Amino acid sequence: RLAVAERRGRPPPRGPPPPPAAPAPAPAPVSSSPAAGVAGGAGDGTARGARTREVFASPDGLATRAVALLLEAAAAAIAERGVFVVAVSGGSIPALLAPELLAAAPRDQLSRWRLFLADERHVAESHPDSSLGEWRRRFLEPAGMGSVQAVGVAAALPLPQAAELYEEKLLATLREAAAAAAGGGAAAAASQAELAPPLRLDAVLLGMGPDGHTASLFPAHAVLCETGRAVTYVDDSPKPPACRVTLTLPAINAARLALFVVTGGSKASAVRAAFAAQPDEPVPAGLVLAAGRTHWCLDEPAAAQLREAEAAAERLYG
Image 1 (cartoon, rainbow, N blue to C red):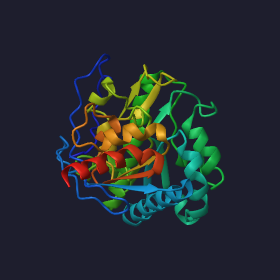
Image 2: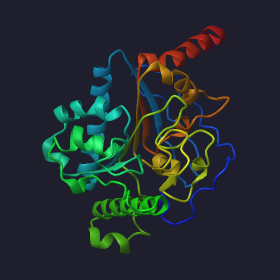
Image 3: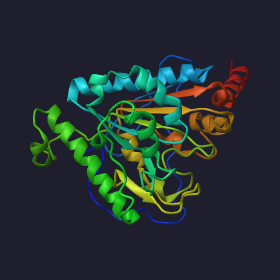
């Protein structure tokens, strides 16, 4: 059975959604060691993996660790399936991670990467708002990666059709990887779709906004209710630009690795909410519990309120 549904459907209803399900209990506090596994029902029979966090004193240390985790996932995927299918985010992440990726990524493996966007603005790649354009300038072109290895959003199409086409391309790539791992190839992918292993991204690289949004999954937005598609669209984003294409929460949670890179004191309140066992208002980033594992890389300002809350709980409960 597919972990990411392939059926088509209408976009999520507009208007306030019902409250999202509360996240699984947060793992025990850690600094740089794995947390206990976070189990939970996924609605698709997929068990959730471990959630871990690490806090870094410097941006360089955070970038080095995040890139090491990404390259570890890439090496495992290439060894097992011959390809690494990753969805990346924009914002401050390309500038932070691209230099370390260029320094550390094995050039003989980069030809096996297939890069998608966790979310993308509905603009041409040449537009300053394009996340893929930023990744191409900072990483893909300097690394000599071919243009076909990164899949962008078709900005010339109307937004609903652009989202549908992006989903088709993503699922086709994942089916080919699954078929290859099972001993088939691209030609066998379609005929073996019902028998193939669950379709999963190898990794999703995520950031988080001060309001707790990740990808283009915004708090109290109908997009959080989309469960039938891997990719959908938002035409009323509270953060400009309004029109975006985004992975859905089920698609992110089906991934083998969800890797968060979060920096800055403006994110501290949302980080605390993401890790709270019973938050007053769940934030979308806190709903991410990937099938394999979820790993948060934080700098000290971003982790400050979470550490304060845990210290207060320790004093209260011993």
